[in-house]
Image (cartoon, rainbow, N blue to C red):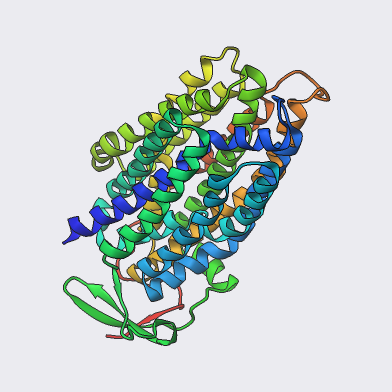
Length: 438
């Protein structure tokens, strides 16, 4: 039963990520062709991408704890349906046409939907795994989920490499629809409500505990700021994990915002080169998370794997920043085979500090910290990228903004050296947002 549940979850995550990642190699060229046709450098495109990332992060910062907490009440499956459905709309716009007016239509709708969709599927999937996996196997399971995402990244990127830009968005839209149909048909929710006909009005619920369900009073549905502060302050390890998540996401957000524009300006990369680069990173990540991490996690604790991953990420970013030839970014991407350990380990460390009834809320809180980083990141790195890729740069260093992301990742690594894994929380409640009735 457990295998079937997790299998359906992995297929759902694979299909969703396959559709999402498929369009990434093309979106830079689509943006540049719509806004600055025939140019290799476009400050408007860089600033619009940074603004989108900041607004998305702001919305996600508010929505992720809410989504996670509501999934504790109404079930993971019900909450998964919303972001997966909303994400189809912007893809369908570019599948139809990619002229300037349609691009701005896509941009506006993507801006609105991403505030709710960005990170929701990952957050809810992690909570679903925590519902069905014991604490001793959680790090490996989280790593496998990340590996499924990486495998979807590889398949999506390879597909984008082989088909035209217009076909890319059309296929992505179709797969997104299929992912929702599959999830709604086969995924068994890890939560079962008392009132099936009106879950939004129910004030109690039942949570599966082995083969039985036990009653839980729901209490408040929406977490307050006080609840989030209480959650963050409940455990030093959880707080440290949140800080590491913030700085690592800050660095990764800055890298993603800068990398493609840097490579296009420095080495004239296009969709095919972006796809090749992503394939290397994706293949390395898939092999690592699906094969290496399940073997290493039982032998090494999550804290050690976290430090190894963050240090490799630092090297990865510093190499990117000083790329002196077009082959250097390809070599730097190989460090993903180790750097991908970081995020599953952060999630596993945080999960073990939470009671079973607060997995959604806790994962939502960590996602909220990552979203906050996505607000700060474009405000910090987008102006640097635009400045150092322009003729107005104070000194010649096109990769300066990427080097700064490496320093941010170094802060995350330093913080990780201070984490000492606590005894996992079993049935102890962290906050008073819900209560268990015997």
